[in-house]
Amino acid sequence: MAQKKSVVITGVSTGIGWAAAKVLIGNGFRVFGSVRKQADANRLQAEFGEAFTPLIFDVTDGPGARAAARQVERALAGATLAGLVNNAGVAVAGPLLYLPVDEWRQQLEVNLTGVVIATQTFAPLLGAGGGPVKDPGRIVNISSVGGRNANPFMAPYCTTKFGLEGLSESLRRELMPFGVDVVIVAPGAVATPIWDKADQIDTTRYANTVYAPALERLRTYMLSIGKSGLAPEKIGEVIHTALTARRPKVRYVVSPSPMQVLMTEILPKRTLDQITAKRLGLIAN
Image (cartoon, rainbow, N blue to C red; front, side, top):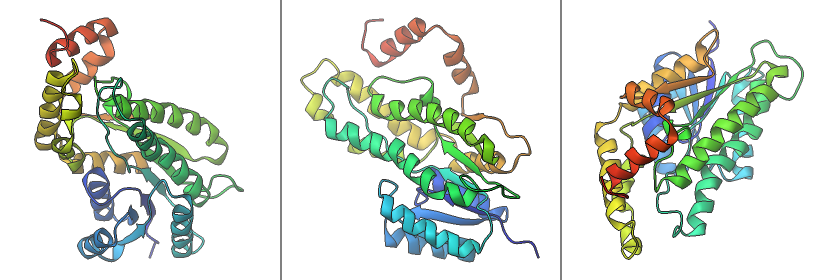
């Protein structure tokens, strides 16, 4: 009986990471998923069964990530890891002129530095950095349509996604000697808890700025995403494709509104500036 292919997914407690684990396990993979809390590890172990192994570490914690990699290496018993899905992330919002710098740093640390830590840590298990391996694995980086088009007040989040696009492109070319591919999955609106947290954003600290009304409009929009976006399993299916396609695309865009994504690619940036600012009330119609 052939051994199951194994994948590491960061940030599997909810949302896209959870859905990716569900889809991949349903397609015969063994999933090692990172969480930060023992309670989440227990819950997911009960939900997914023997095909799931929780890894308890924070992606910003190098020693914790290395301990998790040793755990995966023992379980692989000499086999190659089929994939690393860099999914863990947070979303920080606020007007850049007034955003606390500590929040900016946290956004970069989790969404970009965390990807570098996980990639450096698990890359040897994918077949990168050593001698040739029979079946090198792949890296799938979860970006966003916000990695090509940035909305106001989402500068911290979009900066990390723009950065992840560049990181992925450089890394894909650097890993070519090892046969390890790097694929971007860029979701649009997805119904995940990351956007539900918009309700917790304290906009009162910006109440005396010109941005206060627009921030309320943005918060309403973010909450609507948490209810009407794509089911995260749709993204999980694309992640499965990115890991298994014989010749995967460099970048997969998954959006409930493909035309809207297309328009942001085609329209001149100045036109998009006007449309976006008018919708949020930053300038008069």
